[in-house]
Length: 177
Ligand SMILES: Cc1cc2nc3c(=O)[nH]c(=O)nc-3n(C[C@H](O)[C@H](O)[C@H](O)COP(=O)(O)O)c2cc1C
Image (tube, rainbow, N blue to C red; front, side, top):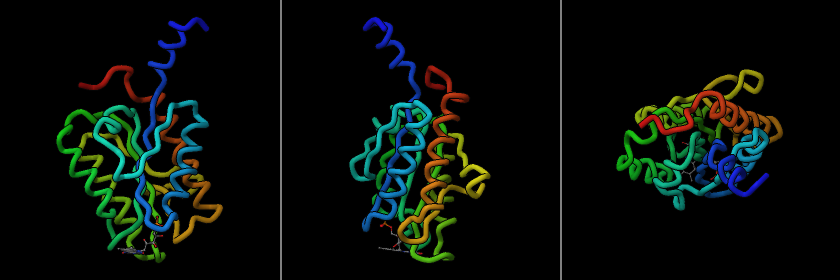
């Protein structure tokens, strides 16, 4: 493909951002599986740790997948920091696709409330949020108890693929605003 055509094709390529926080590596492992699922759909993918991600990364993406360990039944402080900073760009994430994943210590340790806290922040940004596909669970997002096992990693991969497919199908070529 000539250079100009290839530049244009790259500019039109849909983009997925995976942002995660992780103290002991469990959510990080999940993030890698989410990344691989999104890459399989042909989208461009950026992966950032919560403390390294910027509002520019959020604006760059057509789809944003947030992963946080469950801390006191909600997202971690590091993830909350990024969400807090994102108020500066409120309105500019409208219409983007969002999804979430978490690792918790216990089965009933607040993993679902953590997913909801992440999805809630994205809803407040006017994003269109999705859960995990029905074949891997079909609820609020991907979950692992501690270190992710095979099933949790499959759910993460499926979540990444779902967002990759949705950005191609739903998001406009131009920003909503
Ligand atoms: C500050 C803190 C708070 C936590 N709160 C919870 C909690 O409310 N419920 C729970 O099930 N696990 C809780 N955990 C355990 C972590 O969610 C769990 O170990 C998780 O697998 C860590 O993921 P990471 O390796 O990505 O950091 C907490 C851990 C820390 C450090």
